[in-house]
Image (cartoon, rainbow, N blue to C red):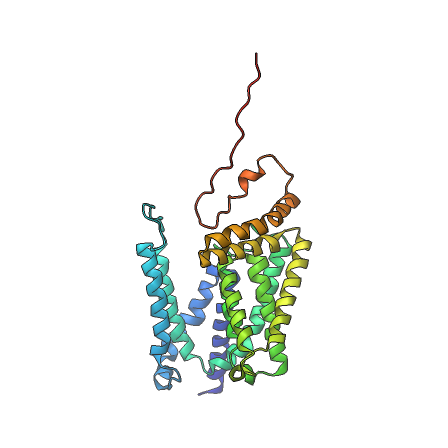
Length: 332
C-alpha cells in the first residue's frame, strides 16, 4: 500500500474510534462524523476485507448479538414483566431499534476493516475516555446537570454511563501484554468509571452491572488460572476506594447528596433483582434514617415529608398515600 494512503487510512480509522468514544457525551451530534469516518470508508476498503483472514468466527460474534436483540424485541412486543391487567406502555421509538441494528452492522464491518484494531484500540481509547471524563467532570462542577445527574447531549444519563463502563472494561483485555504504566492507567479508568456511574449519571442498572463485573474480577483474581491475566485484588480495591473517595469529595463540593441517594437507589435495584419482599422491608428500615437525613439537608422539614418518602418506589408503581389524621372540629 502507498505510504500516503496508509497514513490517510490510519487517520480515518483513528477518528472513527475517537468518534465512537465521544458518542458517550456527544450522543447524536457525533453521527455526522461517524458517517464520514465510518460509513463512507466501508465500500472504499471492502476489497481488503475480502482478503483478510478472520481470527474470530462470525458466528461467535453474531450469536450473543442475536440473543440480546431477540430478548429485547421479545420484551418490547410482549411486555413479559407486566402484571395481569396492566396496560401496555406506549413506546414510539420502535424505529430506533432498527437504527441500532443498522449501526451495529456498520460498526462490525468498519471494525473488521481497521488494520490492527487491537493496537489502535489500546492506544486511542484510554486517552479518549480520559478526555470524556474531563468533559463530564466539567459539566458536573459547572452545574450543567438535571437533579445532580449529567446528561451531556444524551437523552438519558444511562447512555454515557453504559458506554463509559463498556469501553473501560474492554480496555482490560490482553492484561498480561500491558506495561506497568498502562495497567496503572486502566486502574485509574476503573476509578473514573465508578465516579461516572455512581456520582455523575446515577444509573442504577449500569451500577448494578458494574458491581457484578467488579465482583467477578475480584473473586477471579484469587484463582491460579487467572493470576496475572486480570487485575489483582489490591489494584481493584484501590480503584474502588479511590472512586468512592472522589464521589464523596465531589458530592460535597457540588452541594449534592448524590452519593447517598445513588447508593440507596443501587441498593433498591439489588433488592428488586433479588425479588425478596422481606429483605426489601429490612433494607428500607435500615436506610430510611439516612434518606431522611439527606432530604433534610437539602430541604426544610415539613409536615408532609412522610407522604413523599415513597415517591421513588422501586417497583415502578405509585406509592400508597400516607395515613392522615381524622379531622377535628371545634364546637360552635
